[in-house]
Image (cartoon, rainbow, N blue to C red; front, side):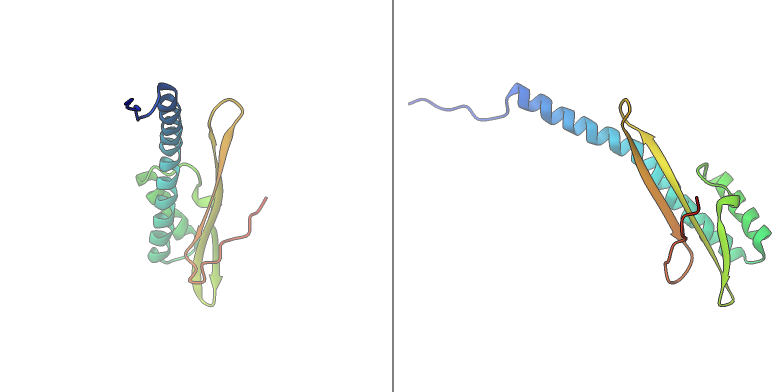
Length: 124
């Protein structure tokens, strides 16, 4: 009786490790951009809560941006509108992450404080 060996071959192990390494590399590059996106969303909520006019909202966002290490957008990139007597703040931006050689990953982030959740139209 011959017992057949079971398990993964060396080539299979290398392929699995390469795939896991790629997923890990991708995660390590995406997570910081997502954390910055969450910081921006929190900053616009805080800026809206401060009230006031456009200048006060921008100053509040800039203070949060400095504290939260936000570098992708500035207060000038915010879309501040009055809708039905309520101030809504929106933003949209893209983050390009270089991967390997000419390959890169483009992430599109957008958010708003509007209750409808409608995000701003992209301005080119």
